Each structure stands twice: as structure tokens, then as C-alpha cells.
Image 1: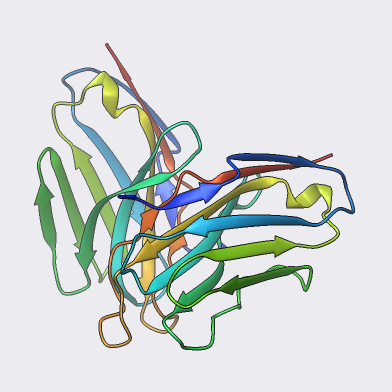
Image 2: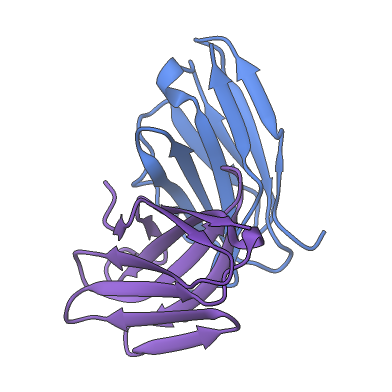
Amino acid sequence: SQQGEEDPQALSIQEGENATMNCSYKTSINNLQWYRQNSGRGLVHLILIRSNEREKHSGRLRVTLDTSKKSSSLLITASRAADTASYFCATVKETSGSRLTFGEGTQLTVNP
Amino acid sequence: GAGVSQSPSNKVTEKGKDVELRCDPISGHTALYWYRQSLGQGLEFLIYFQGNSAPDKSGLPSDRFSAERTGESVSTLTIQRTQQEDSAVYLCASSGATGTRPYNEQFFGPGTRLTVL
């Protein structure tokens, strides 16, 4: 079963705007990762945030983690049409080795 | 190659046939994972290999599914007596995770799209 829940399920914005996607989970985690998927095929790792971290940046990406609320957010600033893709959060639980448990994903559309 | 590769990229088979899917991980990566993605179930973990340890098979949906890995290289996922509900994209990933440092990012292959008629 999917641990993560993401909202919104779909997000449509204009180029240049910021996009924020949220993820919630249920159990204790070691880390949370965000992945991007184009056209329903391979996933590309974007960023990993560990349970003792609160915020992480990578280029135009900013990820926050609130372990007390069991939630994370992914912010993409100054979006581009090429950012159009599905975005998934995935958690690594403390008790299940290193396998990923994925959320349902957010479909982001950036209109030129 | 630089990334994870999978073959075939697409596979169409008839119900009841066996299929074999292949994954070549990134060289030097000791951890290898299989996931599948289907419309109804999202992204699901199937099986995980770490070095010479016994694989974690807890995600395999039935005994028709099995996987092998030769050392720290190629892995094959076999589905016997395929059913229509097995239709999905099967994704392989590898990581540099080790027994003492298990929590690394995973690098995914392009997937094999399996269609069971």
C-alpha cells in the first residue's frame, strides 16, 4: 500500500511561477526523497532529505521536512515548461531497509 | 554504461506465458531494486538485493514472481504464467547503498512496459 499521499494530484501553472507540492506519510522515516518522472517511464532522483534535516536546496528546488507533522514539501521556483512532469515523494522507513515507499504523485504542467 | 539499463523496453505477451525482464545496474552499485508501476497500484516495491545478503522478497505479489541476481551485476525478474493484471511498467533501480550505509538515493532505469493480452 502507498504510504505517501501527495497533494495536489494535479497542478497547472504558468512559466515563471512557483510550484509547491506536498507529501504526507504515516510512519517514522530515515529519509524522504523526491523523484521526477517524464512520460511514465524512468524516475530521476531530485533530492534526498534526512530525518534530522529540516530544509534542503538544490538549484531551483527547495525541500522541507517536518517530522512532527510527517510531511514534506517540494518547491520549484521560476518554473519552466521543461519542468512539466510527474513528481513523487518516496520515504525510506527506519524499519524496512532501504526500499522506497512512494506517494501517489503530483502531475505538474507548466504552460509556456 | 553510465546509467541503469533495462531490456526489453517493451514486451507484449499472451496470458499464461512466462516472461523474463533484465536489469543492468550501475557498475559498482551493490544494491538493486525492482519496482512496478501500474495505473491501479501506483509505484510498488517488489524485491531488493544487497550484496551477498538474502534478498528482501516481501513485495513480490505472488509466487509466480521471482528474481535473481548474479553477484553484484545483472538481475532478471521472471513472471510465470502471466496474467492481465501483471501488465505494468517494471522499473529497476540501483544504489551505492551498503550494509552499513543503506540509505542512499536510487538511480532508476527506463523501465520495461509489459502488456499481457
